[in-house]
Length: 283
Image (cartoon, rainbow, N blue to C red; front, side, top):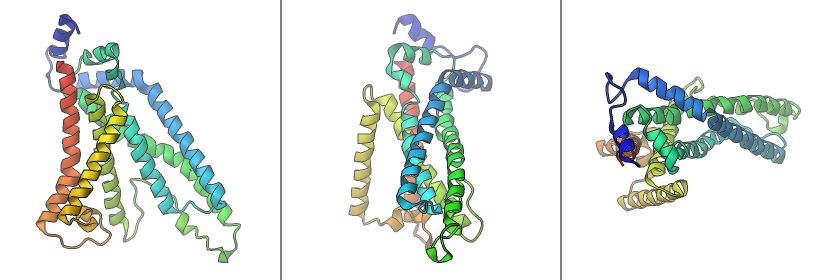
């Protein structure tokens, strides 16, 4: 990077506005980002939709149209969101791997915080919303097809329409289990945000094969966490105390552990992504 480019990067993003955050400047950054990346984002969702349709067709063919219970839909939704959300997050700063594109991105008139905040909103909020709309657009007609097939079976065939109700993410069903479902869905989303933060931080830290290296690092951290939990005698009831079906009165140490694991860890990972982005700006 030339001296003039370095000085341009280091200057305040706009004269007369806050160097940390400016709403008009942030909106300009968001519009520019959408104009540049919308085709890539729509293409990503298209590929995800095609893969989901293929998996559903394969599963329904094997089960004669019976295996689409609500719990199965929930597994499809969340595991698909975790996998595709990680890939989407890991590719957000793809331009940083190319010198010319990285220079253009770094010199864009916006603060480090604004670029990081836009990443958080696009990756952690807008992508799950877009994925949810896509999921429902595919699952709703498939669910009606499954119900129509199920109506052809005799009453003694074991098919229950209630068991095949459409799973609505972010909208738990009414009843006694609504609070539990809402709490468990929040656990899934917190796990997603932690995974996405790891993907973003890894893409900014590693220069080559960032996604593979981040996956390897995440796997090592996962094994280390399991080992530490096993040595400390922490069971599932301790690590997942906030999401248990029948939560029991837990000591303060368990609540603190869950707070660190489910709130502190994602926060630290997103902070690490911010620090890596700031280092890119400075160097």
